[in-house]
Length: 501
Image (cartoon, rainbow, N blue to C red; front, side, top):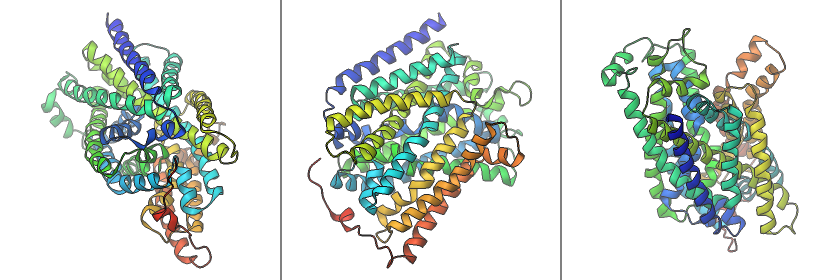
């Protein structure tokens, strides 16, 4: 009976997504519709699309469980950071200026943004390749996060679960791209807010936690607000900063600003996005921080990627709530997967192929994007089957992409003196710094057990933060020392207008 109720809840969700795909897909007529939704998204649509792309099963399962295991209640700082820095400050600083620029210059992708600002086709090509290649590990981490939940709660084989996720995401994308995805994200965002609220209430009330009195007792224990060493604080704040500021340079997040209808909607989106992040991220990390209330390290504590799923199972939640939780996690994961896939594949079809084949029509470009979406999802499935923790895969992806492109993107919005050479040096500096732990991980996969290599492979968040900071500094320093050598001819970027979409 329990399994029947769970499957029925999932069936209703899948039917709703299919319905949205059919209805909204008919409205997608151009590449602009497919990639940025015709630049007609309101505040709620944009903010919830941003939030659902931001938070997936990677956060609920991988990060919430991992930070709870290592830092106890201190792990809640990650959720607060995501709310303040990753949502409120990001929208405050980036949304309106990015929307204005993208609307005037009819930008569809982040590599297109970089080319228009720095006048470099090579930079556009480099960005396209890096985005496509290194979004694959992040996409794979989404698969893995949701699969671990389905395995524990539904007793479904991990591979079957990942195939189902892939099919749903591909269906939404093929039916209409951004238009379908944004409408689906709106529904999924509402589901996530309701689901997290119910989850927090029932987890706090369960016997393992013991209500607010139990939480107060836990806070005083060695696993609550426990004293931490300097290395632990560095690691925790690296996670907080990477998962917060890392979104500033991720193309799937940046391109959410491209589709906002007008400045007024961008302003309203700040409040909506912040509230969503506070509830969903704050709630997710809070639940993960209670893991020591459920399990004992060295005795029955599950593997990192299975901590939260096993917590939900041990909490004896009502069957219908388990169904809602499954829909919540599937909603979060499918929306993130759609955003990542659409971003990576539209970048390849528009910025790599169409840029070099002038005769390619919009219709052919849209079809090609859909083909790449299928290829990308298959590649993600393959990577998800490797023995790599969720947290590591996400940190490699976010670190390399944000480490490379956060600085030249964010600074371009405010700093007119930034030039092409400064941008290139900043991109390459961030790229190679963030690449270190990812390369170390690949080396360990070939049987290398050197202590230094293994240690580097586990420091993805730390190197991601170092990459972003170093890239910002290098961009400014090189630009200010090479103004006469390589001036930036960028006035059109700030004042020009392209009328035709």
